[in-house]
Image 1: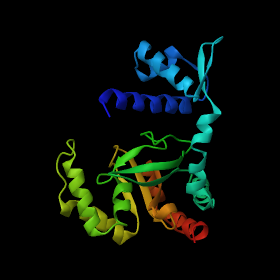
Image 2: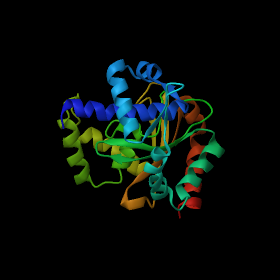
Image 3: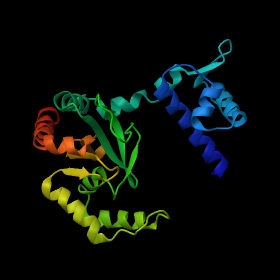
Image 4: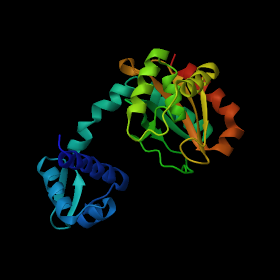
Length: 246
């Protein structure tokens, strides 16, 4: 696939994600201005999405809005991930009792990807929308997800990560396994200032992921607040997993 096609595909998803954030009809200049697209190429792309049936165009107001085809397209994903409702109930429970942002993550190639997020009333210093990705070997969620894999699998992933052109400095097996083994020994991860200064996450693996995949659940917030609440958060995660996931 050429660079132009890749760029166009990326922009389609950026437009749809922008609608998800704004949740209202938007005009051409609003969309292109917010996303930094040239008017001409932005207009052509929007017309193409309209032609495919994923956006409606209101000619009188000159605004675009997603169609129900968007909702139907991914409707099955929620049921596939949360069909029994156990994970959803666990996340809602943890959000209610702790007041923190609750994040469900799984491995996506060389990243830990946020599958579902329930935000706290107080926003995180770093945005954590569903779909956000964190480096598998350089994040708390990543170390935790790696801890469920064999040492041999982790070494294969480490070599792949080191082969990435932007991976500097290269990861040694010793430093990665130190993080992974710490997660194995404690049974959870408390990552502090790892992705962003001042922000952290307390996370644990959860059993019974759909399609044989490994999932982790974490509570994110300012490190200082998480440190004060660490014992309570761990207690609630463990009690919640026993209550909703067994």
